[in-house]
Length: 311
Image 1 (cartoon, rainbow, N blue to C red):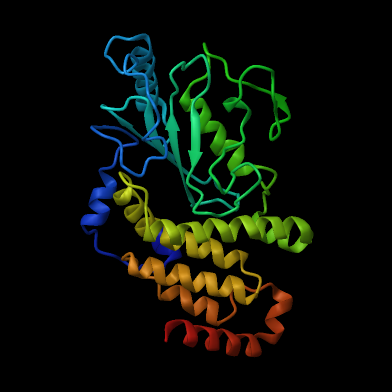
Image 2: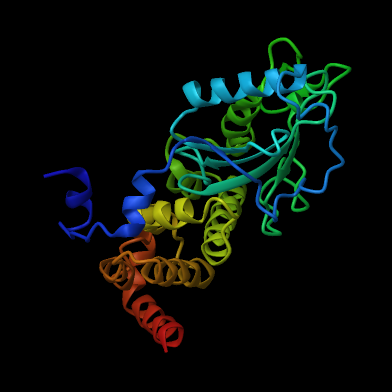
């Protein structure tokens, strides 16, 4: 029996066209045109750079080759034949962080004097203040995106800056995943360990976790263009893991319960059978042991919220 069936009671779901399309998605792909919602679409580009054979064009082609061969499975990139100065990327949140299973979208611009200066990155925040390195207005704080004087990398405690000979977009995307989406919140025990040991750290973890999950709801309603099939298929296949992980972090608050129910409903609407996850919540299975003593009253509260939510 595989691990998924062990975890989810041997529930089998039909592999439909959504999942078929998802399985065929490439980590790196070259599309004809960028989408109209790309943040840098109206950037005043240098047309000489876009001509085949130019130094800029050759450098970008080398970047494409590197991405095609070296991208990890947790990062997707889309480039554009008619706008080689633009890219769009999605990064999957790393495990053992509050960002686990989340999707994070970035628009990329290679400026006229690239690679003499680093690429410009815009984060699709959905107006969520996720952490201090991902601004709600879209700015990404990362030393690799700076040039000139050496800039301290706040996350790793080392000095790192853009190097026109050695740095590339793959390095930038990897750094965002390993540094920005892990910043000061890694914990071997996950959120449960933080919840039990350090209230301040748990509040930080809880904020990042809940905002990551709210982002899932927003992107299911309005996914970035060129990546709609990926978003739909990804959450179709990861819904169970996300709900199980969220249940482990629930602290009995109405806020987290309501967010769990919103995730449940969104994933059901996206085509994943999730009703079996409700039974664990109704039984208080996600609660710390000391809070289960008042489970009767808690379950009554859950039932009230559940009825209000689904009515």
